[in-house]
Length: 213
Ligand code: ADP
Ligand code: 5GP
Image (spheres, protein in one colour):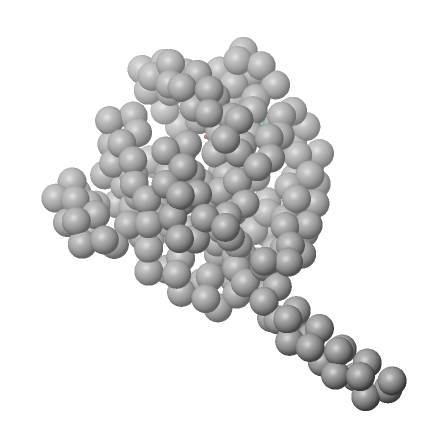
């Protein structure tokens, strides 16, 4: 009946709290959700695919894209640049599709303050404990001890921004967190602002009402 406007769904957390895992689950639940593939200057990890996980680029290319206004937001994280290319997001939102962002607090803040801010749904994931966060980073076995130590050090900086988000979930049990995420998304899609077609529907209801009275 009513057309829908796309949501910008932002997932942030300290590294290792479960963003990528939950993003994958959410997209498996609803394959219509588009993932915003970030650009980054960091090197690919084993198994990461260019264009699917990230657009890997060099610093000069990244800076040129920022200068040309091609990034919706960008930030410097763990010594590398990261950014969300604007064009793909714009296109999806205009087509009524939701876009999922796995970005840090700096990016979340920039998107919230952008023209698309009112169509943003932001969710912060907290770990059950710092000990568990560390365990998950080690268990993921993708980074060296050195990189893990740096990520752990930065985790408090990320956590300290928890209170700027619309929703905050403690990712203890994965299935339970996924269920909460689905509920949040379902409700957010029903917000009045996300349903521009409602105006027309109410007008039709009014015309019908007047016709009958
Ligand atoms: P992020 O994207 O936030 O860095 P990941 O999604 O890569 O984090 O998760 C880090 C590790 O923790 C992965 O090995 C993942 O399988 C595991 N993990 C995620 N959520 C949970 C959870 N609720 N309980 C136990 N392990 C989890
Ligand atoms: P990783 O190197 O583990 O993939 O990501 C490191 C951090 O950078 C994570 O906190 C992730 O959310 C953040 N990040 C990834 N892509 C972007 C992006 O496009 N913009 C911003 N601001 N942060 C990003």
